[in-house]
Length: 111
Length: 112
Image (cartoon, rainbow over the protein chains, first blue to last red):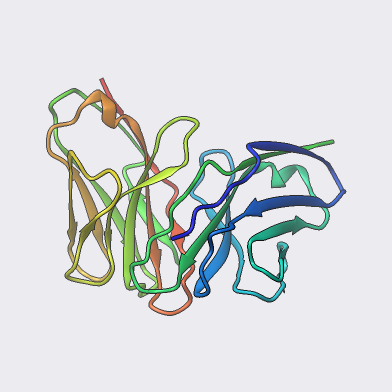
């Protein structure tokens, strides 16, 4: 699976959009981009994933560049409860194809 | 509530003791995984089971064994605990189609 690069930390104001970048320049054609987050030592929680099209769900939006070498997770109206470590992962969708976690981005939402 | 259940939630062991961490899921998921997370670090894969009856090593398998008891249950055993195994252990499961992991709440293990 391709490796990803994320900034180690970022701050965000409550109520504002949080834009979390992820670089995956070596991604291959059949690898999906996944985002998970981990709130204060709880088990990681799935947020969203996509292949090439932009995706949106009730939690977030995922914007993938046309060349698929980078993506951005958007939390549209960050709340204090969004303070967490966010992990960007790329993987092929196949049974037993494990998620490999990097360091993630530590996001602090401030009042 | 449907999900992944891990027991125990906390455990303190003495060096050399053995124990088994239990994980069960009630979502009829095919694949199950064991990760460890050391303070300030990301999760590292210990072992996984792509389907009932199969297990494979992950990134950091030394010092651990696993058993996929049935489709629901995947246990992790420490035969002779060492202080380096002090960590938070997470179990996860994944359906055959859907490709989204569900994680348990973790077992916090301290080896003294």
